[in-house]
Length: 210
Image 1 (cartoon, rainbow, N blue to C red):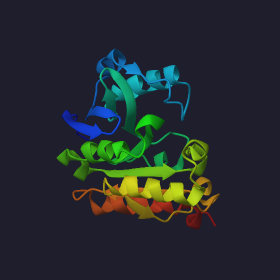
Image 2: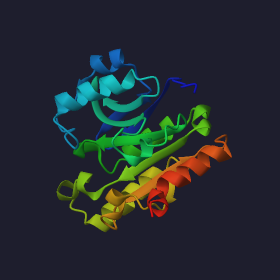
Image 3: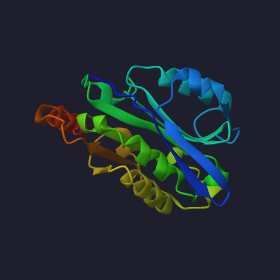
């Protein structure tokens, strides 16, 4: 597969200040920016910053950030699914996962997440890929936002829909373990039928087990 990394950038005016939305970034560029201490959703900030630098330099890795001056305050990642998850069991070169999205509390409610996703979908090369995201309620900041599970789920669906991702059914055990969890995906216009068929097989692997 060809992995396009055409750089895009835009300004976003918010009530808390002006942000720069940009990407995809190289690992070198990622390392030049500070990483905000409130980016703690997945692991301690220093470790997450290091992980993003490594992802940025993968052939398929794409990182888009929101920054306040020289400090990263939000990001979205794209890479191949984790080898331990079912989405990698069929080695699909044209299936990429929106693996993580995070914005610091100061800028939540300012459409930063939507703008990150929209900008990341501007490159025409996304039409060659199936882009998935798996949403698990245990990653959500319910305490920090004061939202209940179902209201947070609506927020996540609305944010992902800004990039053209829609709900897809699946029998994946982790997703099926709670009704608020979900699989969303965007199937590019140039994705061949055989890849869509493989994606359907991944979504419903359990039906072929008995």
